[in-house]
Length: 208
Length: 208
DNA sequence: GTCTATAACTAGATAGAC
DNA sequence: GTCTATCTAGTTATAGAC
Image 1 (spheres, each protein chain N blue to C red):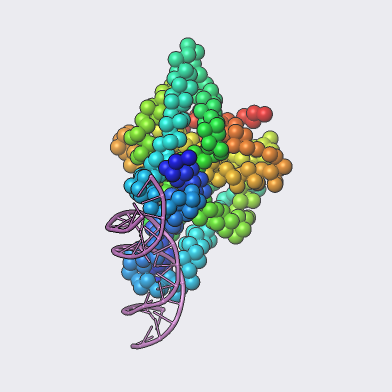
Image 2 (spheres, rainbow over the protein chains, first blue to last red; image 1 turned 90 degrees about the horizontal axis):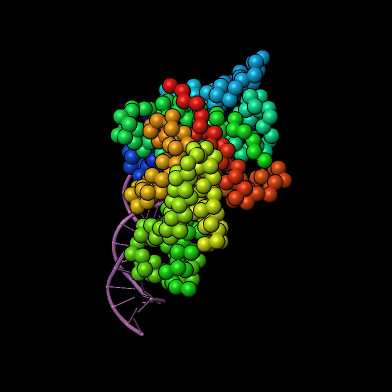
């Protein structure tokens, strides 16, 4: 296993857990069992390392998400919103094959990127992967054409917030579900819980 | 104006904007135009300062929220979920009288507290202000008694996520609404947009 | 490519004069 | 209660030997 990958593997777990600001290069390199200087040698800077961590996941997720949403849009019959959100399940869970706890780590990273470092990751995703976002809004529009572009903007953002925030604290939620309700859930279980919620939210009556 | 309050006023804005980890005591004291050592003199540590910032808001919000939710629970007729969530509007907007942009700042701080510093603020709120949470779950239970305690737990967490995440990035959202849709919204407008969404989410059909 | 050593800087916290 | 000066420990990043 290469030094570069050792760094990426250690960094993503620490970033997901403690945020980008909250994780030092020293923690990463000692966890990865490589020399401190290796990060700057292989990636140039901490910021570039963050981009590399996210890109590795996006390159895995993006094509699968595009084809799942694309299939939904090209069907003859109109999809419903639960179908649209359900299209995310397989691509997201596939990240668990790519990497242990990959789904959970990726979604936590996404949440960190939105709140840490004042939205630099939002910029990164929207400029580097705009086709994923376009695919999604197309699918939602097909499922719910009455929704205006502005309403769509608001509701998609609320949905993003729900998912990302839930996943940022998914470990705590899984612990609470076990201790308070004696219910053993994993990340797939959390995703299945959240889909009816966001689908209903997006489909809510429009009040003016 | 006392040094203590000057520090609190400067700290809350910086914390909301850049997170707790992302804000140094040096930034706070220079913004507040007080000496660096004053934070440790008046608050003991950075962590205690964070608690003091949150307490100032919670002490303002808590009683108003309790009476608004209490009124709803003591009514003869069953409230609906939109009423329950709408009970938050006045107490939250009242924070704007207490402090310029108080509503926005408080909700951003809440979001920071959930994601920064590995949930220490969640612990702080649930242990220091449990009656606010109990009031809310009672009101939701009265509006939607079919929801099991476990479903309630999940959906209230999703709701918290939606609100808090939305407010963390409310400035960006308000900018986008203006530039892309020529719509001028303020923080009250964002709250009114989000209520139908979360009410529908909480009221979503239960799938097992 | 990988290492040690260290530069250059920033963090939170404190001792002690006033 | 407020200041300066400083301590200790942390940070990212780099120069240069191997």
